[in-house]
Length: 305
Length: 103
Image (cartoon, rainbow over the protein chains, first blue to last red):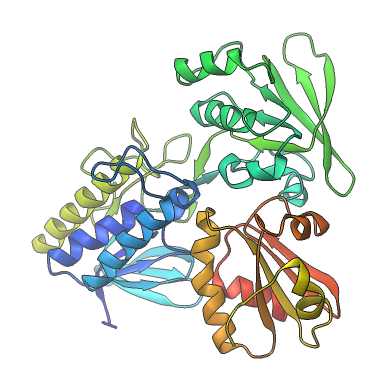
């Protein structure tokens, strides 16, 4: 373990691991710090169909290949959650729950996590009727009644997926139309076991040991409806977690690190790659592209020191 | 020790009647986060002889999953003396898994 790494990458998702590959191939020492497991959000995707080269690959297999590629090139991985980032001696100190590491440059690739509804008992009921992953947990709701809350592409895809398994699917959407994919919205409207509840918010989770109903409030007239169900799938978007770095980089209103395609932040030695950057399209292929760009720019920065 | 595959037929002996605490991993082969957690569980099984780690496939053992009210995976349930004492849903780090069973 070197005293100071050339580059520390925070986050071992597709963006972070690709950055590690590029940095190693440029001959730089690299430490990747990850709180949970390599892979990140893509682990939840059972079948990736839109990444060039392989027509079908699971998110787990994809991540494992990238991980082995990065490790094979000599990137170090440590599974410790990063808690802080500070300037130190012309470089940076990256604090984790266990240790502190030093690097000349840092790439932030922390991705994003599921946005919660923010309702009482939501945490307690997660895994007891409340889920954030339809493809992971849909099988538990065969011939049962479920609801999906959200109006984006993920919500539409989740509702379609669940309508093949569940007896009845409610889709609770806070607007009167969908911003998601038109094809999916049309498909969904054609399903007999799907009811779309427009202009509505889920306002209460009703439970005993498990979730057994939700209270849905109409935004226009304030009327309240109770829907009895077995499962609620929350698909109301994702939120980045960049607060630990907010003293060094600019965040937009939604919490994303402000940076262009070159992945530069306000701080010269700190770069950002993947879903936690301000960008138009958050996909696997744009995450890996960011990893390549951030590592290349970080190496340029190191060469200029 | 390695991870023991448990079915409905062996659950009582391996889990409920175990004289050491048991960490039961409810999982499925198609579940990415479950597969990501597997190596962590394997490492713990190798290094911690103080408890036993068992794996339950929720597709073939759907009755066990239902009996224990498992409806999100990965789901880790800790049993001591035949009783559930702790539970965690979703991908967690290796240290957090150890903490779950060691308390």
